[in-house]
Image (tube, rainbow, N blue to C red):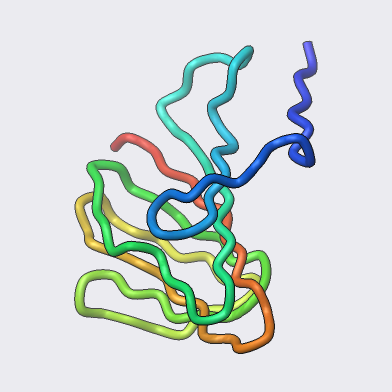
Length: 110
């Protein structure tokens, strides 16, 4: 069986201080121990610093920004993959004045 989720019909909601769209899981699919979402940050915007009991990766699909995990930070951009260990406070900021920063997030239980 093939299940297709038409994303153009899905609105972004305000979560974690930014526009956020949950991708997985969704109704009609099997329960999983992981989830995913799509983040959009306008120039100058940043996610609310937060932590959770799940590990996570960020995949930068457009733009540039600064990723902060704990007291460590680094510049990131399109094509970068960032691992975030469970229970580590983290946030990402769009540092590009002209372009959206878009991130796919995937999280899972350890």
